[in-house]
Length: 149
Image (cartoon, rainbow, N blue to C red; front, side):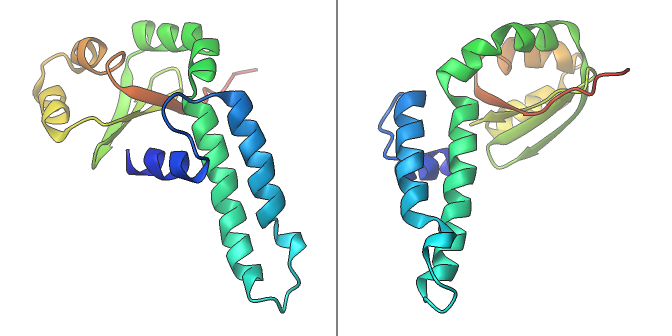
């Protein structure tokens, strides 16, 4: 959640993510902080390099959790979460990463340790996650499945 708030602050996003506003702000910020704009001897050159990388990372992150992106990928997400079992999972802080048997991996934000412990202790982890995690927390896809030839 901390990362989401930092990126929203960087892009001046108040509540709802709007891809059009996000893209406009991204272009403005990257134009202002592009490393090629600064000479090597300029003390801001290193800062611009770091800042531009942060802008790029933030843009891609916010696009991945935007409502329009989630809506466009909803059918695939529903197929994955309803037909594919869980292969692996990791929890750190409030971030739960779940890898599915079909090769897709999703991050779920704001998942408290108590919910994670209940999932681990459940005799049917997939069913628990389906009922309590998949559609209850903000998520984003971080890894696509590998297509076989």
